Amino acid sequence: MDPSHNDELPPIPAKRYFTIGEVSELCAVKPHVLRYWEQEFPALNPVKRRGNRRYYQRHDVLMIRQIRSLLYEEGFTITGARARLEGPQARVEATLSHQIVRQVRLELEEVLALLRR
Image 1 (cartoon, rainbow, N blue to C red):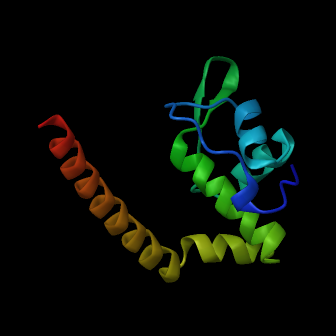
Image 2: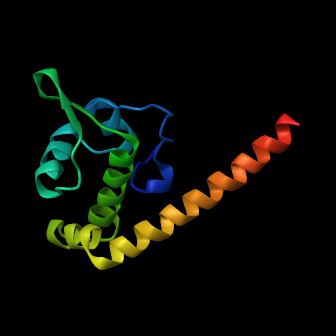
Image 3: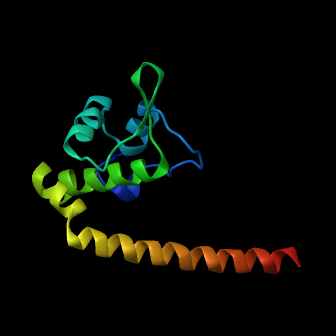
């Protein structure tokens, strides 16, 4: 599998936390690159537990995939990608995607209610 495009990355399992090794495989990015991106992208902040072990949540994995796409596919620099993720455009996109998620959730809850009848 050629992991050069986000649509070819594996689906993200339904788990609460992911290790750096799991995230590395899910995002096709080496662990040392993930650690470097943490320094460059303040919004990327996995939970750290004993022995400084990192535990990433689903939103971290999605952000890493977005960073990867900006850098490797769209040709952004680190500075450009950071600005893209933190700028006003990113806030608009986050609000829109939040609204879409809320709508899909409502629709799924309606379907579930129908199935339970």
